[in-house]
Structure formats: C-alpha cells, structure tokens
Image 1 (cartoon, one colour):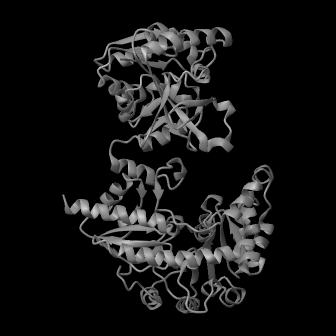
Image 2 (cartoon, one colour):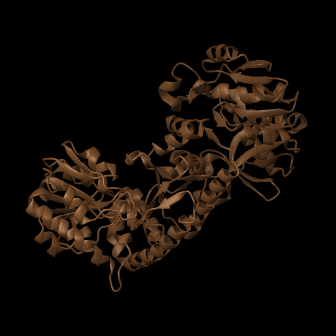
Image 3 (tube, rainbow, N blue to C red):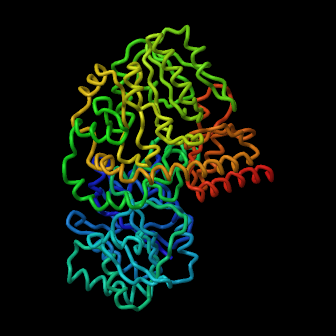
Length: 611
C-alpha cells in the first residue's frame, strides 16, 4: 500500500497565508496540514508516499524533508500548476497508481486518523470515503444506495439544495486497488483528460466509472470521525476549533465563538436560551416562502418598525423602539446614562460591559431562597446610583421577583430619582397563577410606562420567540426625551427584512406562542424533577428557560468538557460567582433532548462511582 497526495495547487482563497508557501503548509493549531497528514500516514507501514508538488514546490519539498518522515517519499512536479487542475496532477502520478494499492488524498484536508484506519481495515479493494452532507460542506457529492454503491456523482456546480438529504459529500480520500487503477481508472483518466482538457477534476472520472455500473468502487461512510477541507480563512478558523487535541481547549474555543453553532451539527447546544417550541412550522414556511423577496428588498425604517412593535406589545408607538437585538438597545440606553449604575450579580454581562461609568454591584447570597425586592432596596438604599438594572427572571440564576414587588422597586427608585432599567427578556417563561395570562406579568403597558417615566424596559425577542438569528429586541419607556435621544443614535435601517417580516406576521401566530409557553412550562417542571435526581447537582429554583445548578464533588469545567466530548454543550458559570463554588447553567430544551442530557449526566455520575 502507498499514498498519493495532490499538493500542487496555489490556495488563492487563503490569501495572505499562501502568498509565500503552499496551502498544505498552513498551520492548524500550530501544526501544518501536510505535517499532520504525513505523521498519520507514517504510522501505517506504507511502502512509499508520492507527493505531487507545484506552487512553491521546492519550499514544500524542503519543508517535508525537515520533518524526518520514515516512509520513503517520492516527489512529482506539476510545473503547469497555474493553468491545470487536479486531474493533470493525478495523471502525472499514473505510473505510481499502477504499481501498488493506493490511498489517494488531497493536501488541504485535516482529518481524524481513524478515517485512514477504517479505510485500511476495510476488506473491499476500492473505496471512496463519504460523509452525510451537512450545511458547512461544499463541492462534489454522491448519491449512494444501501449497498454502498455510487448511484450518481454530483459536481458542486450541479448541486440541488432540494435534494440535499440524499447527498453524501466526498471527503477526497480514496482507496484504489492496483487492479482498479491499472485496468479501469488510469485508462479512463487518460481518455477523459484528452477529451476534456487538463483543467478538470479527477472526481469526474469517478463519475464516469460509476455510470458504467461496474461496482468496482464502493463508498466508505464516516461515522463520528472529524474532517475538514481548508479552502479559505473561515475553514481554517473552524478547523482550529475542531482539531484541538486538548478537549478543554477545544471546549473553550467553541464557547468563545458566542454562537454560530450550526457549523457543528453533531453538537446539541444547551447554552443559548431560546424557546424550543416556537416558532411553529407554519410560521417558518411563511418566512421561507417570502425568502427571495425579503433577501432582495430593503427593510422599512425606524418609524414603521415602531408601529409594528406597538402592534405586538399594545403600547403607543412613541413608547417603543425596535432594535437589532436587545444588545443594541442596551448600549444605546447606557450610553446616555450618568452616575453610578447598580447591578445585581451574577448577571448578564452586557450591561456591565457596555457601561462606561462606575458600577455598584450587589452580590446576593446564592441559595434556594434567592433574593427579593426588599433585599435589593436594603443594599442600594444608601448607595449613590443614577440607575439600577434588574433582569427578571435573572440570568443565570433564574431568580424571579413577582410583578407587584417589581412595582415596589420602581416606586422606591422613583423617590430616590434613580432610573430603573428592567430587562424582561425571560418574563414570558414564568409560571402563571390561576386565571393569569402572559400580559399580566409584563410591565410593557401604556398606563405603567406613563405613571413611571423613570422606567425603561428592555426585552429580547430572541429568547421566548425562538428567533435569535434575526436579532430583535425592544426598548419601552414613556420618557420621550431619552427615547428621542436613543432614536437619533440608531441607524434608520437597523432591522433587516427578515426581522421586520417576523414582527409583521407574529400576531397571526399569537395563539401558537401562548400554547408553546404552556408546553414549555410543563417540560421545565419535569426537567427540574429529573435534574434533582442527579446526586452531584444542587438545582436552584428557576422561572426562566434555563436552570443553574451547583456542582458538588466534581469540577464544573471538567463536567462541561466531559459532556462536550459527548456532543453536549453546557455553560460553566462559576466565573460569574465569586464564592469558591462550582456552577453550571443548562438551557431547557425539548423533552426528548432533556432526557438525552439527563442520561449523560447520570452516566458521568456512574463513571465517577466506578472510577
């Protein structure tokens, strides 16, 4: 068995990273792509490794020679790399293809060693490694049958997104038997190159052979092994988060991305906090049916956005501003505040991070009782603050102060001439008393805003409405002067068309929204009961769509890392709480997903018991 690596390309899409060296010399977490590949192949007792070089070829050869690879290496030069493609590079190595069984691979792949091991141990003589198509993939795909035969080969330019569920992506790793190469592949390669030219791809030859239905080549499906093709800087960034040997470092790198987890489809996110039961399919279908129009037309300006928002929340349009997520409105509001700002911690860091003035912090004792309005008043009563922030329910604790006590706080703040900033992003999740409705637990009402002009209410649309991707939030207040200042600081088009359209159609789905909240509360109730059965977790009461737990007897970050290795992402919040104890925050997801998490949490406990 030998390996052939195609490494002649210029890698232009990596821009400055390939100005003076080849794509395969680019480093992923400090190790070049080619070194990573060669170290893997060097452990497989191959007869030789053939590398086709071109762009910056001598530099690549010198670099490889410095790696002290034990397996003999032969170099083939593609001097026409600028005007040819990989079909020409492979044709230059055709004599070697006819000499031995071959592992053929491209030089821009980062992959788990287990992929090569599984190919080598598979008794089938010729294989194409494939993976189920996912959103991050690009390039040639296959349609395969239950017997691992190639039914169709789909080049990237003919990709049909309506058929994506049928597709398997070629990983660009092949095992080719010497008989297959000599008698089928190389003759077809020569004929195709002569007919179509040298600026083609060798995968096209695979397509032709598959059409003959000779069944000479089958596919090898990847299970849980990782791989990534490095074509541009974004690919490199993602690969570095995937291919970190240290699980702790890999966990931290992914957490530092603050979202975009669709790039990691095998991971379930219990960090970010959205309603698992909304929006309904019909709403999604309506948005999808308008996708082209929304993508190609400008959104409306601020005035229309305020009108749409007032229609949803039932307040005068001059009392409400629609923002590009609550984060935009937090910054706009805090930019015009003066004096020290009161904050209760642990909390959502955006308020503290966005305020340029002094901050007075109240650290309530973390226990099952939580804190109440009197606790807040007692702490801040003798403090000189110009504003006070209350997130209710709080993040990450889930602590909730009932609406009548919030009004008590507002009245106290009014007497002290303190501006009261109330974040209601999670209030729709709270348990309702008998005969209560969602509107009974919010203060976004004309009469309350007009009575308390020191009140500023921020509400994220992302959380309870389940649409974090469109970035929506509202700010409500009857303080016309400050609302005018804030409007003047925001761009006229701060909301995109998708966000505006969602707000426009929401009221049609209001009943679905209310039903989703009822379903959510039942799911949360069961989830909390299950969590309380986990011996090493102390579960704090919550009225939000997440639960904070004290972790006893296990380091919280190590717990997060162990779950991360199982494809479960939870948040370690110990750093937010300076009491020397360990805490995690877990989002409440669907009942099925919650049960999966409970299973893994139980498994961790059992593993520790048997350690």
